[in-house]
Image (cartoon, each protein chain N blue to C red):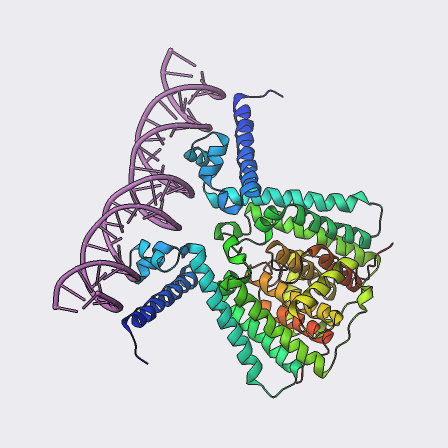
Length: 237
Length: 237
DNA sequence: AACTTTCGTTAGAGACTGTAACTCACCTTA
DNA sequence: TAAGGTGAGTTACAGTCTCTAACGAAAGTT
């Protein structure tokens, strides 16, 4: 296949876009979120500020792309942890995935904050935005694994009618939306577990656990153990 | 007691400081966090920008004062809910307090975000900062109430030795630091409950529950019910 | 070789934080 | 009561930011 000049330009362009994202991330990690600016990125790349606008239309646009890329990286890390111990029971895989998630979060604090603990600009909330897509793909990885767990060995679920109507409706809507094979009561348990761990990670990322804990790792482990118990997953020594 | 002119100036000064905080909050609520700037506050007050610096040394300084004031307001709201149904069992009070907390959070979203879901500038992290003081006072209100609950009707606690060493050490340190009468195992349960509800509220404030839920209220209620169960507190119809 | 597209530049508008230098009104004190 | 100090405001400005406009130069296309 012939490589045309246009082709080459396309690749060059994507390389520069990647360098921009990369530089944004480097600044974020090295100097904090307030140091990430179009000017600073350009400066670091030896360009003048306005040049960046050839590649990204605005700051939100740029940061949305950075976030999407990071979601991809995080998803890959979780999937790798999952597959590393294949063949294994879905329960064990879920534990490994959760730990991979926290490990990523705690070794990449600045990035994790950006993903989960920073206000999302209006523009990046549209369902078709790169950011949303990447975020939903990430969620799905966990949902899929819980589906596998349920298929292999169903965990105890509450009676759906025992849930307050307001909650039940939302769980049903989510079940519908995600087209999952899981029964709604199991979806509810999944969401409870998920928000539980998620909440701990978000608090950790925001330093909101510091009022009580200096090292969040065992706190997460304790939460994970409780969540595991709900799903009928227990540690094997 | 004679009112001197200096006295009058002091009061005038504090009045202006209050107006500045007030205006900052109004801008935050009406136009979002990015609209809060020294210039905008000054403009809204009919002053020129630099005038504000007579009253607060920097943006962080100013916002720290706003946050401290909001913590005071939130604490008062929780205390009021607690006292409104006195005499009552500590369990019922805890439920009322938790609901007051969420009610405050959801009717004052922008403010709650500022308190619990925004990065805390370095300067406001010093233990003697106005912000820290106000935050710790707030935490204590809940701890006190759990102490009362424990005194009246102890809830089940795990064996302290069953906790992983890393977690146990931190719980012991916290128990020590807070000089609470609660045994460490009970402190652990308290912290677990607290971070649970807290996590939900922080996620709600950051719109991180939106991936699954449109209305966080029943989600919080469900969390509260679980937490209540742990503390041996159940709803009375 | 001429035309088009893309990538870079500089200039600049309009925000922002914060500093400097100044005026003016008020308070204290001799 | 006049003199001097203090504090609250002002304008001017330095330096940051985002983003637009206008232009030149290089690369690709025909």
